[in-house]
Length: 240
Image 1 (cartoon, rainbow, N blue to C red):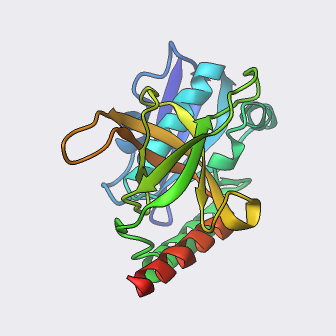
Image 2 (cartoon, rainbow, N blue to C red):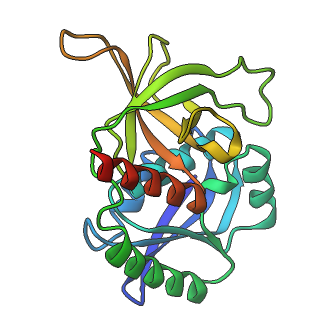
């Protein structure tokens, strides 16, 4: 059984999970967490200190809930994560998706820094830029999966801070994790491209106005690569 409780810490909601997080015990984790906050703009510290057990399905549920909450524009940090759960998150290759702190005080300070950074520097990272960029993608390979087929060529367009549209005939179902590379030059070498982990939101069929493709969100992109992408898009704007 999973228990979700809360308390207020320095204008941030501290939400505490205790018990077991499995496919049979979670209910609607995203709504359970959100209901513990003071409003739609409230930031969250999610404590796993008293979580006794998390299954592989529970990890998927946790990732999905946290990603959906961040999509709402909130800042979310994990705090006081037990070592065995950290090891499981690492084993399933999802550790980079989270910002993790050992104590609440440090996490609160970082939330305030992130708020300032978001307000001053990222009011407009890129707002549906009218540009087409060469892309490659493949299904994400987790730690226990076998061989994954190579990257497929595509074109990315309608870029926003949270995601983009990839033109492709590939059929990939919603909620699938994919590895994506975007070309910033003439190819996909490391210095000429950026990479990120994405999640398919929906598959769009071709219409008279638009080609078929995948609408996806950015789950994780390193800060330096996000900066390189931003610079590339700014150069494009100056030329257009």
